[in-house]
Amino acid sequence: EKTGFSHFMEKEIHEQPEAIRRALRGRLDREYATGHLGGLNLGSRELLEVGRIVLLAAGTSYHAGMVATYALEELVRVPAVAELASELRYRNPLVERDALYFAASQSGETADTLYAMREVQRKGGRVLGVCNVVGSTIARESDGGVYIHSGPEISVASTKAFTSQLAAFYVFALLMGRMRHLSFDQGARIIEALEAVPKQIETILANTAPIQALAKRYASCEHFFFLGRGINYPVALEAALKLKEVSYIHAEGYSAAEIKHGPLALITEETPSFFLVPRDGLREKVITSMKEVKARRGPVIALAVEGDREVADTADEVLFVPEAHPLMYPFLLAVPTQLFAYYCALARGCNVDQPRNLAKSVTVE
Ligand code: F6R
Image (cartoon, rainbow, N blue to C red; front, side, top):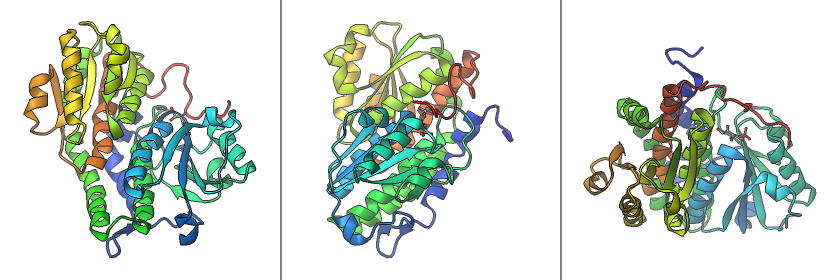
């Protein structure tokens, strides 16, 4: 049932507008400019007492959690951290009374995430699940949670679950923010921005030819950098993960600020850098990093906002996304990088939906 698509990965990338609409459906309240999540099992008083948010996950879900920490800190003004579930479990973690934990997992069966969740619960912590598969172990054993309603994700490489997890976390950030210092107008702006995302992704998906052409030109490279800043730094990590998983090209995701602290040594004419350059407060800094790479003769690809001439002129290659609210760029920048990975894998003749050595859900530690 790939209906019109060559692979599940391609189909699932294209399902994202609908998947995000489903993740948001019934959860945005325009009257009070807030969010609703039915299954949290937490009252207002308990939510107000939360002093710290910890997101536990692995792989792509971990990257979604990392993006969420930026949105949570910005909208809720509460400290938020994403932790690799596998690492947290063995650190004898401190479980503070006012901390709220999330276990984010598409499958709901990832052993690393499940065991970390149990460890936190054993120490008296409260863990909410953010899962796709209904009735999965993490969904059942968590103390409450949110389903992302993406529909089945068949491709081993996770795509739509990433953006749908973001949607769910953003609704939570909106509702927590509105309980604290976020004004009605600020809340209304977030709702409007979130509701615009599916259409903006549709615009990207309506014109994939430039992404495919770019992938064809670069698919023979053996090394790649993906570079972003701020809330889009985890998107760079995710883009690198996607490329290595499906195309077997070695890719590294970095904060664009970090390359001067070492990775610049690897820049050659054969090692392209793929920069994420939205119109946000860090744009100038990213442009500076692009110039640093160019000065070392590294090919520079930029994923920028429609109409950004300066970035287009600085880069060797440019792809565009629509203009959006600054917090929404992770959704819009993720999609072309997923497609880029997909088309590189096609060009290299890889088994896109079932990459070597990987399984869809990792139920062993
Ligand atoms: C990457 C990928 C993996 C999973 C990770 C967690 O494309 O699929 O990195 O994201 O194994 O899986 P879940 O979300 O099911 O816990």
